[in-house]
Length: 205
Image 1 (cartoon, rainbow, N blue to C red):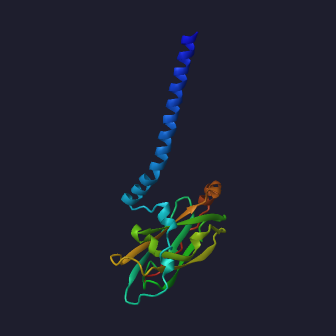
Image 2 (cartoon, rainbow, N blue to C red):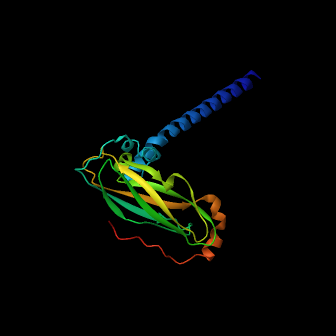
Image 3 (cartoon, rainbow, N blue to C red):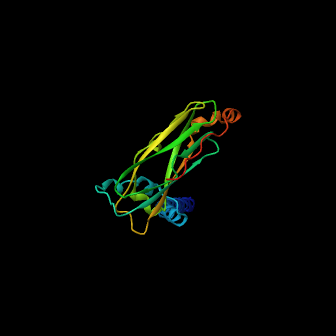
């Protein structure tokens, strides 16, 4: 009887140690995910969540205009295939002075006959320029809903920081418009009734 009790105790201790080791391993893996994710973003050139949240933190502190320097800002747009919209920038690129506020318009049109809601996801390339680009007013701050066949103008106010590194003289602001999940159920109906493309970007400035 005593031998059976002793064996049970050893098994219980062994099980406890195994579970403790598993918990510690999972805890350590959770901490490792953050640097691994940041390393992946750095290698691939993708902006991490921390970098995206930092957009404008440096630029917003600028209180002067650098009239001696020019930076080219390019605008790139894509629309997810699930979203029956057209979305283009009125101007595909601009030359700007760091520290000065500029505005550019984007044109959107719902090619379906039903109301559809989308969300614009911004990114900046090269990623090193991300903290130095500030979006002061942007349609990407909120979800956008367009009724069937509706057209709209979406303005963006932005500023490039005077602290932008000297080696960066050109950057690209990209927007990818995604359809919100709650709108996915109407996707088939929208595809059956899409309108032909009509929007085209104007020549570069």
